[in-house]
Image (cartoon, rainbow, N blue to C red):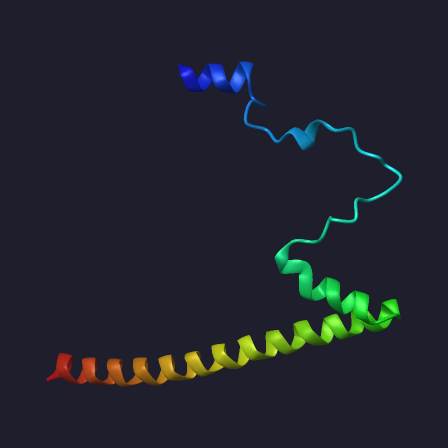
Amino acid sequence: MFFSIWIFYAPNILGHPDNYIPANPMSTPPHIMPEWYFLPIHDILRSIPDKSGGVAVIALVFMSIGYLFLKVYMYVVQVFARFTKEYFSCFWRIAYY
């Protein structure tokens, strides 16, 4: 009951007071930074003056990370395939004898 009253009649009681200051649509505040997971991309784009060069470097970074994940995945699949082959051959030997 208390939770329902709180949600329906006073939803902003725990809100931050800065949320009620009207924003200036003509300027972005200087303290705004991207989230932590966008910071490397943001820094790459800011460090390279040419926009297409920055996009190319970001694509190269993502392709390198994808290559590393693919390399690990292929190794795990290879080890798992070898394990299952040995497991099933042992299973069928026991099952038929």
